[in-house]
Image (spheres, one colour):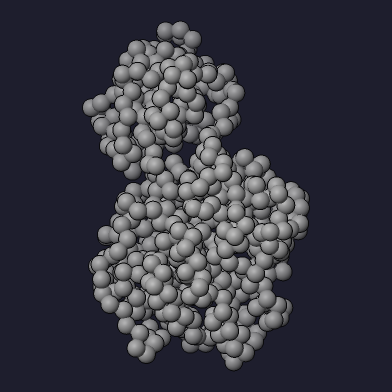
Length: 552
């Protein structure tokens, strides 16, 4: 870690502490009103997206776009290129075959409890002049029935908004971001209203409606989005008082929405991928695993139910057309002038069974690391259930090939959450009482038999007796109980001038790592009490050291 990044981390800790329709329902299709049937407080969401089905994506089903011809790069241009009759024929056959009742049964049999189903506004509240074709909504009706029969809960995800909310092909239209201009927000609210009136009463199966998938600033104005979220929440609440309303974090991070509370039963949806920028792709496999593990702390900062609504086993962007139809991959240097990182052999198009042993090993480890990290909060929904030939993304094949754990709690590599400990660290050091502060690189100490080594994540309570902070126990002495330190999430920083106040015997403050002794001043508290501990520390009402046990 560079000196600059360490200072940023210290400053971040201080700042965090000081601030804070037109489509008619299918004949005879009626849903019965019931209370919300999934406890998002105590149960973990374990789900999968039914991607590429009711909103087509070229990389998930390349064959659809190959049949449509070169002008088709998204569902808008596919329908435009083919014309409505041919497009309806092609897509109707796809809707009828890509996901079946058998798929929902297989999903439930794998131990999953949720499916997230993307749908476009054009299927719900079509606009005059659009080339899109309708008919997908009847298959959504059918899928909800199948899910109920299999014991699964459904998150309905409005995946594409008028004008495109992100410019991605998965919004229905690749290119410029037009959502937020003209009547697009009102048109989106009309689609939300139609979904709510059609499905929100069935909270026994449809536990949540997501207002809009992946709106992308700065093309989407955050203030406009916040107002839309308020209005969308009210639209759903006008129909049902219990249905959870899911809000995309809009790539801002879950905690960016702390304090934003339109009302009850809000879920924040964050999407975590490490394959869409060069820096992430250049990581070693261990770097991918470590980054995934670090996301647990970010999720825990959110003040609402928080799911990772999209993630995958991909360590490359090699899948055919993942970056857009007829575009290459960053990983092998065929996209946008990217430097070559490695080969896409076996990952461009193929099967899980045909992957190399190294790829299988790394994907399994990566999936395990993410499962553990994302269950630190409300849970996860994998992207995606099936593909035509993208083995890093295909849960159905990964289950069959042993890359996705069965049961979901099975771990072949149980120590992946153990963080890497650096040999050197940057620290502000005072060599003697009254001496100057020296900012320099020092060795990372090893814990004695009765000590723990803490990687400081948040620090800076200088007005309290001891520079209490929060961090992660990354190493422990042999006398420290394994149950206390298995995966811990808080401890103090030393007070350099009067270490006795906080029980530490090492000098230095604002350092990346610190040593703490496991003796009486250490208190073990439940994870739910962490925010209360912080509040009391800030008010100066308590001091001391705390290790917070993570949930099983």
